Image (cartoon, rainbow, N blue to C red; front, side):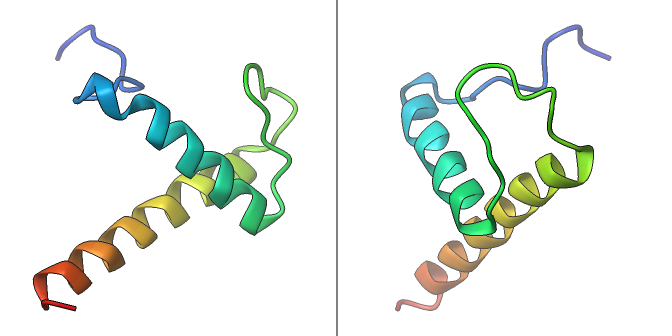
Length: 68
């Protein structure tokens, strides 16, 4: 197993867009996510943001693949 962090972006140029997307999703879900330390949030709150991000990315890819 690699020692690299799982919190890295495969395409470094996408980091800013992914951070913006994360903040938008957190806002939609009502999760008080801030830039920097978020240790005050529960794992459920953090997990809901990540899970919803994945859901939205899959939906966008499905639409693209369907030609819509």
